[in-house]
Image (tube, rainbow, N blue to C red; front, side, top):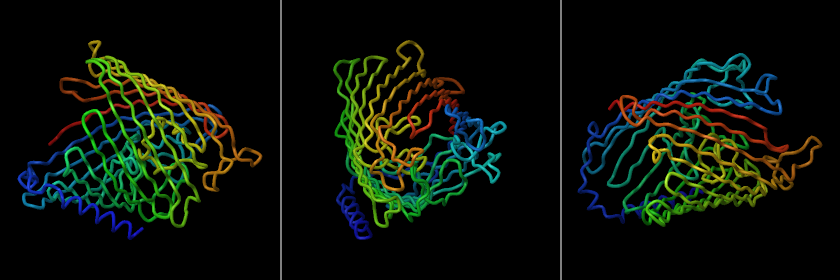
Length: 441
């Protein structure tokens, strides 16, 4: 892998050096102070899960619940003047427990809003502090420190109280019109409900994995406003190699009607010491839909052709599959799934900022007969689970304040219901999220 990493960096350097540097040199840096910004996001988050079959976290009530408030402050400087500009990014985050109730929060099956102490109780508060130094040469930006990558193979998660982050080095280049190249090597992660910035890597379905680093490289290309492509590759050392290809499109039919859709494909194979066992997975999803005025309807299909769960970094958004939704990913071995989604934008009806969404997904044929020992799931008699099924329904309403002193403040309610056979939980879930962003600088 070392030789491959050196080769990738060499290719990246060659691409950058071949860019139209003179045009980029004519652009003046905005300055360290002049280009700075400081934003504070207040996030109030309530979440509960009702385990319908009676599973529980650390009690016997089959119910987990938490209400918390997060304060996320982020400072981003501009770049100093000169051929090579330097800057810093920094953040400070605080999570505060508002209520968890007696016996409604604990370690297995929790809602992952707050850290849990040795007694299985939610901590009253926790914090995260970090930052990165950065340098810009023409159209290339390098960051070293705590970073928030956004690619289909490594993407920080932001679906809980505080965002997830990674520690390492990232590189981004935008020399060519419509093309963004990204690469990085990360040696630690910080999940949303922990304070440490140097935690070991963990995956959603296998848990902690003693891998020293994850590396990625790839790019996004927009051919025009209606068609884009993505191609990425990553390696979680001694665990997996993942390769991703995707495309999305829109096709206007009239001023108020358009078609849209896309494809996503992942190839995942084991790597090195095979810390997550031996596997060779292909999983893909495809979507097609129509938008007409304020309404849009989409149908998607997803299929995992592998013998094991398609896994990804825990609490991250590193899964660009159409049927990966609020709770379920529909990524079990041999699983086939369909989803129908409907969106409504009330701006056309005189209520700008108000949107609704609902979707229903059905998965069938999950089969663990040939799964490796890490991902194997068995029934009460010790036999591999076969012919497993599940469905999930999501309903969401969101309102964003459009004017006044509370402009950009948002209110969101999300309800989820999922039912499954032996391999997954039956759940009813509610999330209430209020966010108030403040631009200080």
